[in-house]
Image (cartoon, rainbow, N blue to C red; front, top):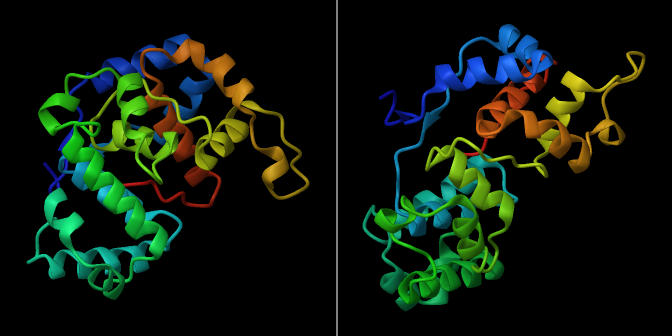
Length: 229
């Protein structure tokens, strides 16, 4: 474990070999990037992980980290329980830097955790990916992309394809599309969902690993992509 992070449980070496064999063009990217080095963030409960995800949405990382730090401090240096979050007055949450929208989202997350819509850590480990997506996107402010990031970076699921992610779309375009070399990359050059889905059929059951390499393709192009936690 490195800095509190842990390796994935699936066979990453097998995944990389299988992807390179199934898609030689992706294999060329893998060769340029090198070994698969994804490490999973220490596993919080789904409630705690989504609490952090909601706080970080649409904010610069440092600003979100400061809000999270104030929130944890307000609850005694710990993640609040769903009960404590529901009982906390709005003034207390606003003082931590939470907007009205995020306060409502966190309260909905807490309520849906208590109702069982958001599963426990033990339960979520036994659930298939799509069921996790269906359940967690019932929470206010939690979309498919947020749950996909949890699946890849928290739960270590090997076959997740976040086709709406900017970095995946850009990395795919840089790797597989014929882009004009005379102009800088812009949004018009991003790959479409259909292009990615069609080629990604070759990548099953290792689409999370392929996505990680597409993020790395952006690094190779000279602009570091900040991966979600």
